[in-house]
Length: 171
Image (cartoon, rainbow, N blue to C red):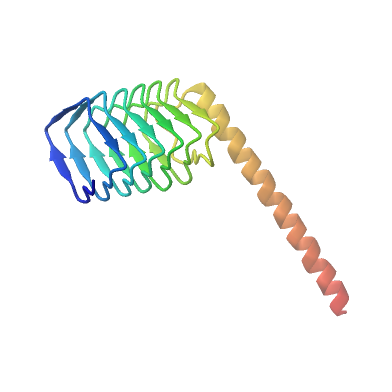
């Protein structure tokens, strides 16, 4: 089940379950996925370009450092998976669900995230959420930025107090 470096272009992929498969550096380009599942796969650095991934199911799969470009991922379900350090750009994630999925340093750049659900996810980075940002996403991003700025200010004050205290001791 080692499909490292697999390259599939211009194909319809239907009723396929990739289970326990290694897809390191795999490339899927201009493919239509229908009833496709990735279960307990190692798919680091996989590349999806101009694919229809609507309804895709991803369970307990490592997709770290994935790049998803100009894809439709509507109604896809990502459960207990890892998308750390991935970049998803110019894509439609309408109604996508991320459940108990690791999303550290994930960039959603120019994506439609309308009605997407992020439930019990780990460390979502909203840094790149800009285009197609709903009012809910905007509020969430602004609250996260405010929290980050408040924490940075507290740390600066704490560090300054320590420096002052140390300076006083040295006198």
